[in-house]
Length: 189
Image (cartoon, rainbow, N blue to C red):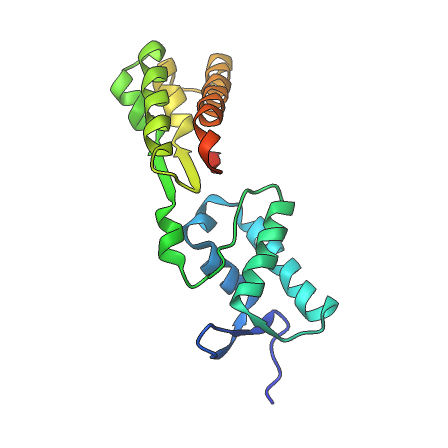
C-alpha cells in the first residue's frame, strides 16, 4: 500500500469509490463559494483540526465524505461561524440554492446620497422578501460601500462607523422579526 501524505485522508464517496485527498482541499470543496467569505487561515485551521481528529484521535485513514462534513461543521462552529452540514453532502446544488444574497451598496444607490430615511424601509422590504423564500443563509455584502454612499463620505470616519453599526443593528432586528417561522443565518459583510 502506498503511504499517504501527512495532510491526506482516503475519502469514501456515496458511490463506494475511495479517493486519497488533502483535507484542506476537501474542506474547500465542501464549503464551496462560502470559503471565499471566510478567512483562509480559519479554513486551514479547520481542515487541520478535522484531519488531526480522524488521523490521531480515531486512528483512521478512511473517512466518508459525510463524516468529514459533520466534523468540519462542528469545528467551524467552534470558530464562531454559523454553518450546517447537509445530511447528504453530495446534494450541494440544493444547499447553494438556500443561500440568498443582497448587495447593500446597490440598495444605497436606489436611496441616493444621504437619504437614510429611504434606505432603511428598502432594507426592511429586502429582508422580508428574501426571508419569504425560506433561505438557510441570508447574506448581505457591500456594507462598507453602502455606508460611504449613504454618508456621502470618501473616507471612513466616526459618522460612517455609527451608520455602519445602525445598519447592522437594523438588519438584526428585521431578521429576528422575520425568522420566527424557520431557522436562518444572517451574514453581513
